[in-house]
Length: 196
Image 1 (cartoon, rainbow, N blue to C red):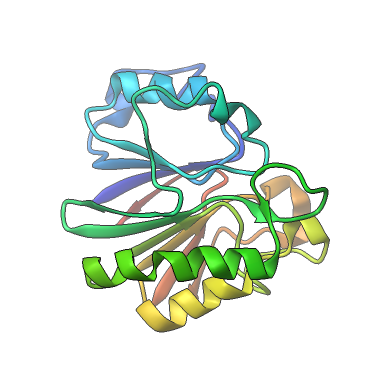
Image 2: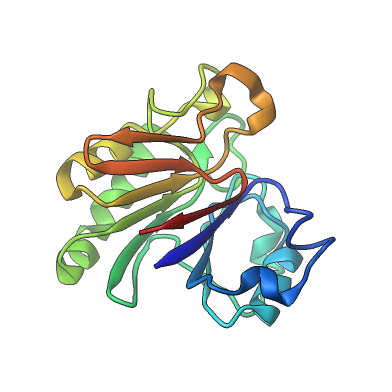
C-alpha cells in the first residue's frame, strides 16, 4: 500500500501546482495534523482514496470547520484494506490550549483505546501529531514527545509510526525517518510517500 503522509505545512506541490495525476498510485492519504481543513478537503475532492487525519495543536478551527470529505481517526482504530490504523492527535500541554495534553492525559487516551486495539487484533500503523519522547522530539516543552507512544510501539510493534509537529526548519532536531526496533518512524512534515 502506498501512503501519502502530510503534516504541518500545506505542500505547494499538491495545492498551488496541483495536477490530478500527482495522486495516481496513492492508496491512502493521512494527515498528521496542523493543516488547513480547506487543504484536506481539496485533496479529498480529487483523491479516489480516503483522507484520514488527526488534529494538531494549531487545528482549533476543526471544531467549527472540519475537513469535508475526510475521516477523523483521533482516538480511534480505523481499518482500511486490512491495515489497522490508530490515531492520536495533539501535543504536549504548554499553554492549556486545545489539542494539548500532559503525559498523564495522553496515557489515559491510549488506555481508553485498548479495547478497540484488542478488538482489531493490534495495530499496523500509529498516526500522531507529536513525536515520541526522546525520539524525533525536541528539548523545548511544546515539542517534547509523549512517553506512552514508546509503550505503544513496544507492545504492538506496528510497521509504521508517522507524526508531524517538528518542522524541517527547526534545524538539528529534524529527523525525517528512523527505525525504532521493527517500526519505521517517519516525520511527515509537508509531504512524504511511503510503501508498506
